[in-house]
Image 1: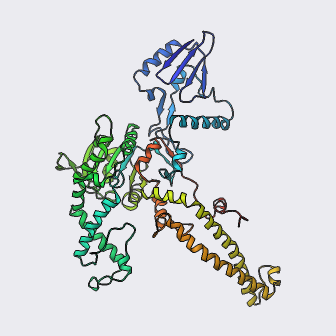
Image 2: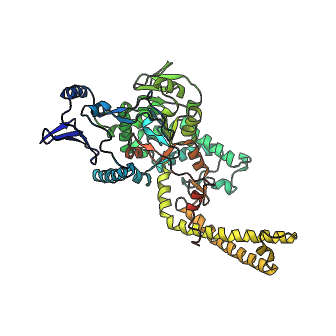
Length: 547
């Protein structure tokens, strides 16, 4: 029996001349495709010579190009999808469906079990498991990641995460110093990321500042922090001691490397200046990259001092950074071959890349500056980075039993309240000498009607006394003062959540989470809760009679 190894993927077995040869796809262990062993030797020799000039992937598969792409049944571009090369099958007289006879439901069922077993055996986290963890990538709108040609990244709090107490603490110190110079009573305040506006609420603002509301306070604090950034005090401190402020994530450079090697153009678009960007990226990336790569080797284009959100809205002059110390010269077009630029606009980027709209994904941590503006003005696909998601996800898991008990009480009040409202309407009609909703309700005695209403009202009031503190305690699992960032009350979504749903196609806690999904992931949105969808509504209830 002969065994011929073909470019490490297929094995051809020839038991004897009259028997059929069986070619087995190594990564699909359940599929064996049969072909006659008497195929054309000349055709195979020609095929083998062609293989020598192609990579392993190119030998077996072809990738759908932009010009040949279509739209699939979910409305996503098929660009980047792999196809089995017909000539590869024909070289062995193979029929691609020879081993796939039978109902596809049964075939898929078998393949799913074997795929799960193989993923487990390889020690690889399957996407379903990743999605149901604090490090999941959550999808608001279906996104075929394979069809993305270019990915732009913000830097601060996206590619580089800072120690909140260290970075925000120093920003607080500089901001307080500026506020004190403006006459604000801040000399005895200490940094606490959970407090904001306490001094205003206490009414202790000096009269010299004039009438001050939350909007005015926001403007004053923003001005103070802006001065700290513009004057460069904080950034000089961070550059001097990056190990004190930066929390390196060794998986982020590897996730970007996978994306680059998958053929995607990578862009860094940051509002930070060149010197700060170079220092931070060198510290956070270089030591984790293989083969003496530097952070610049990852990116096809780097744009500093981008002036977002205006970068997405209008055109600004473009400068090329030409020396290591940051010397710049004006230029009128960008090159996607490792170019380093300052300023410019998103339109310049699109023109340079030859891509536009939904061919580009932008990843950032600011819902307005990064996500909404690139979506609204350019139709780019978008990803939001929100580190707080990890704590919120864990808090939601931890609070499940508490929330289940709370929801049960709320549903009990719903049922009691429904009856109370019907009796109240019957009483209202009776006072106007009109019949109630039904004959039985019309015949109820006055004392029976009022006694039932009194009892139900007392029950609802007592339920409220129980529900109120439980609802407040529910949010405390995440933050004792503000509750969850994604929710308002029990069922309603917060304003931030509605913005995320509107502008962010996908969102996650950190860029390194892409490492678990591969650059070829097809992100499908989850079932959306719609008020008029009976299934969505009833599925959120404990049950019609579980009261």
